[in-house]
Length: 296
Length: 292
Image 1 (cartoon, each protein chain N blue to C red):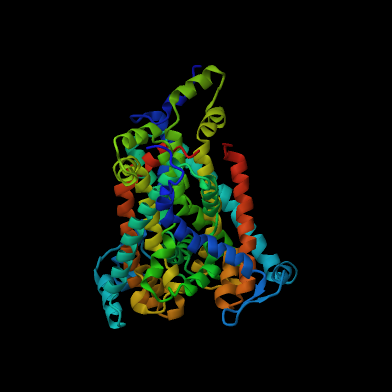
Image 2 (cartoon, each protein chain N blue to C red; image 1 turned 90 degrees about the vertical axis):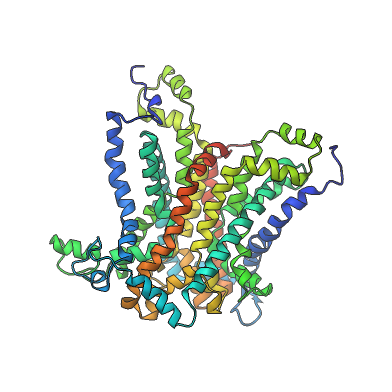
C-alpha cells in the first residue's frame, strides 16, 4: 500500500482511546487546574478568586503546613524508596532460587497488592484492633510486654508507623514483577564479561551489571513506586476509620483533599490541593526519570 | 575469576548456596501471606471464635454460617447480594474486555502508524501515568455530572476504559513486532483490521494478559464509582457493599464481622485465580516488553 496523504486510519484505531482518555483524564485535569482559581461549593456556580486558594493553603492552613505536608513527605520518602529498594532486593534474591520455589514465593509476595483496598484494611484493622481481642494487643499482653491494650489505630503515636508498615507490605506490585523478570532476563554473558573486567564480588556485580542492565524495568518500577506511594493515601483513613485521622496523625495530602472536597464541599480549595499534589508527584517522577530514564 | 557468581542467576536446581536466600525469603513470604491465610480462616469462623479471647488464628469449628448470613442480610435489606455480585461481574467483564481492545488499538496506531501528533499523544499518555486518581476526583465528578452519568450504570465502566499504563505497555510491545511483517501482510492485500486482528493481537498476547490482570484488579476492587457517582443501591457494586459491612458508621461492627470476613474471601479469590492463570504470561510480558 502506498503512503497516502489522506490516510487517516490511525484515528480509527486511536479514536476510542483518545475519546475516553480526554473525557476522563485530560479534561478533569484541565478543569481541576481552572477550578483551583475559584471559590466553589458544589451548589452555586464557581466564582473566580485568583490565587487566593493557593495563598491560604500556604499561609493560613496550619494543618496543611504543620501536619499534612510533613506527614506526606515522611510517608513518601520512607515508603517510596523503601518499597522500591525492597522490591529490588526481593526480586534479585528470588532470581537466585530455582523456578518452582521462585514461582510460589513470587505469588505470595505479590499477593498483598491484590488485596488492595477494602479487604486489606479489614485484615489489618483486626490485627491492630484497640481492645484486648486485637491480635497484636493480645499477643503482647500474653508475652507480658503490655499491661493494657493500646489503641493502635487511634493513637497519633502509632498510626503513621502502622500505615508505613501496611503500605510497604502491599507495595510489591507490578513494579516488583517487572524487576523480577528484568533480573532474570539479563544475559549471563554480560556477567562473564564483567568478571573478566575485574568485578570481584556480588555487590559490584549488582551495581555495575545487574542494575544498569535492567534500567527500563528499574524506571518502570520507580514510576510505579512514586505513583503508588501517593495513591496509598487512603490507607490511613481506612485503618483509623475516620477522616480526618485522629489528631491528623496519618493525614496525607490525598486525605486532606477528600476532607475539603467531599466532606466540607470546598471544591475550589480542594482543587488547589490537588494541583499542588500533581506538582509534587510530577517532581518526584522527574527524579525517577532522571535516575533511570534513557534519552531517546 | 574464581568467584564467578553470575551464572548462579536463575538456577535450574537447588543447591546449598541458595539456602542463605531462602532463609529470609521464606519467613518473609510467610509474613506476607499471613493476612491472606487469615482471610481464608476467618471467613469460616463461627461467631464465638471470631470474638474469642485470646484470639485464634486458625479456625477450629469451620462453618458456612457467615456466608449464609451475608446472603441473608443482603436479601433482607431489599437488594439481594446477588444483585451486587451481578453488577460487579458484568462491569468487570465489560471493562476488562474493552480496555484490552481500546489500548491495543491505540498501541497499534501509536507504534506502527506515521502521523504528526504521534509523539505528543504518547508523551501526554506517559505524563498521565503519573497522575494520582484522587487528585482529579473533583473535576472528574463534575464531568461525569455534566455528561449526565450520575446514577447511570455506565458510570462504572466508561471512566475506567482509558488506561495509560495499559497503552504504555502494549505500545512498547508492538514496537518489537518487525515492520517487515506488517509490510508483507499489506502486500498480500490484508486490510488494517485484518493486520490488527490476525497479526498484532496474537503477537502481543502476553501484554494483553498483563492489562487484563491490572484492569481486573482495578475495576473489581474499585469502590469509587459506587461511593461518589451512584445513589441507587441496586446499581452499586459488590466491593462497595462489602465496604459497608465493616464501616464503623453503620454501628454494626460486631454482627458485621463474620459477614465481612466471608465477603473479603469472596472479593479476594477472583484476584488470586486471575493472577495464577495469567502469571506466567505476565512474567513474559515484562521480560520482553523491554520498556525503554
